[in-house]
Amino acid sequence: MKINKTLKVNATASKVWEVLYTNYGDACDWASTVNESKIRNVDNSPYEGRTCSTSFGDVSEIIDHVDEEKMELQYHLDDTPFIMKAATAKWRVKSTSVNTSEVTMNLDATLATIPGILMGWMIKPKMRKDIHQTIDDLKYYIETGKQSEAKIKSDTKYIKKKGNKAA
Image 1 (cartoon, rainbow, N blue to C red):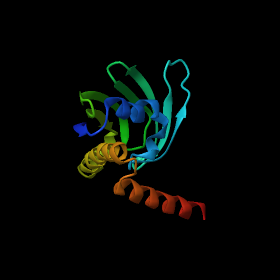
Image 2: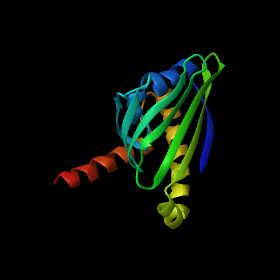
Image 3: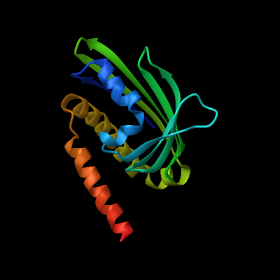
């Protein structure tokens, strides 16, 4: 399953790049699909990884490639929720003028066989919607400095669910 989205952002490319790459471990600050995130070290890799609690389950990622000059970032999931077999995300930020930029995200995800067969009709539309929302969250966060309504709602639901599990 491939999901591609490009969005214009009313901010400099360097500001977008800072949120995406420099603050890579802080995706939970802006992405409604990511409720918790943190950087992790990756053995035998020049890059870091991150762990995230997401709307799809807990995931672990490793950066595969970074080109800071071209503002390109690629990472893959090395520990996926049961519904996924594999996923790779590629982000690119491009300056379009002094104070505007374009951010593109390409996701290539493969669902696990059994969940894909049994629930693919339900999982794929939700995944598309959530990924599109994530990019909208990024735009909103960069342009306003605040979390989107979707992010606030997602975190509230996550905290409530997490609190119920602890009780």
